[in-house]
Image 1 (cartoon, one colour):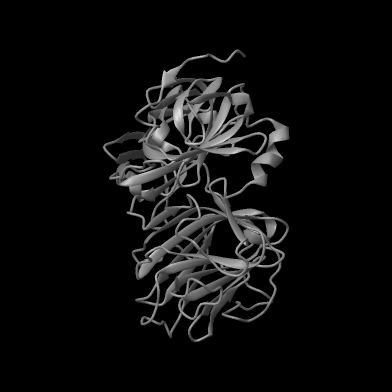
Image 2: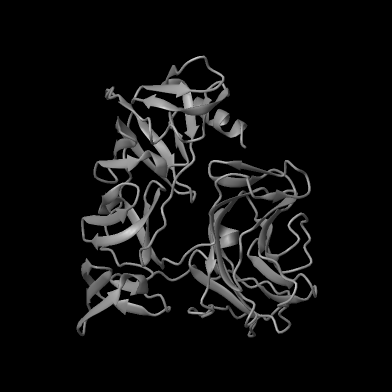
Amino acid sequence: MAILALTASLVGAAEDLSSVVRFSNQDQLPGSIESLTTERLVWKSPTLEKPTGFFLKSVLEVTLTPVEPVNQARHEASITLTNGDLIRGQLVSASDDRIELDTWFAGRMKFNRLMVNDIRISENTELNYRGPTGLDGWILSGEQSAWIYQNSSLHSKSAGSIARDVGLPDECHVAFTVAWRNSLGMKVVIFSKDLATERPTSGYEITFMQRRAFVRNCKTQRIVGTTHNAVALQENEKAQIELQASLKTGKITLAVDGEMIEVWTDPEVIRDGIGRGIHFVSQNDSPVQISRIAVGPWDGEVTQVPNRQEVNGFMPQNDELVVPPPVAARKKLAPGRMELRNGDEIQGELLTIEDGMVRLKTPFREVRLPVGALRSVALKPVDLERCKRENGDVRAWFPDGSSVVFRMDGVGEGTLLGSSQNFSPSEFKLAAFSRIEFNIYEPDYEDVRLATGN
């Protein structure tokens, strides 16, 4: 398919961005975008005598400094597509053939239902931290090369800790995506004040070893509790981890891929001398990748009950080291049923969404709920499809570590015009992206992409 050679100046939106362009021969140039077409990048750099043009076929990626506005919406909907893309916005409508989101970076986007895996909804609370967007602000311990930043993720290369003061509130919610190979082995520390060490003396340390997770009070060294129920961490190589902790009640919760795994209570909760930092600690032979970190407040309410498994007629408690038999995967919601924020379920058909309110037709009567009261939206079962790969496809990354693939059809004033089978043609704000990858289907470029993390 011929690529349109549309040209437009990006002066204004892109000129103020501190950027780096990377090439297929591993060369890099700092600078900014002078102009961009679907075939050619003109780059302005202090190391160049004048703005210089490069064909996109030799460009791996351009890193940018995104500008993300404050989100005042009451909820945030996350749409996962069949190609792995994740798009966030406010849910406008959901029908048998189309899902609509209002986004700050492309206005209203209309998604093909056949290519939407699911929709998850969360209350839009103000976050203390979302990222990562680089190594700035992170403190390394152990080998200084133990962690690198690459592709909107933190990657461990050897044993060591990477830590950051994220301003954890007394009652906090910490979420992140972790990926690994073969067997998961890592630690997470919250409420730490000793950011330069992998063995802090304040806060709580959560250790993950395959399906097992246990919590230790870093000050008293006491084991608060243990679980062997994190089955997804043994059966998969990627998971969404959510931790909730309260310095008021001593409660700590663990959820994996949306399923509540365990709720612990520390009777000796330490409220003095705690810090506001978080650590990710890698083990020697267990490299991990951390992405999509989100840290914010928690209301202290436990809305889900763990599905603990009995072993030999009794229930495992705290640090009893028993190995339970395999358990069934999390039960999926029946067709037409939706999960509510408080953990309940409701049977219904989505009629309309207007002004942040959902109107549902239930077997008994119509019900109106705030969109933020839902955790999921019941979509009509369909045979899912995956979008075609197109010449000119780019992968654009957002500051939160999510990404979207689209064919770059043209360039506007500080915008990229894109299309995909996943969604209707859209105009994306260039300032929304932290990085744009080119030639994403070129196999010879993959090793080069991974060779120079920073």
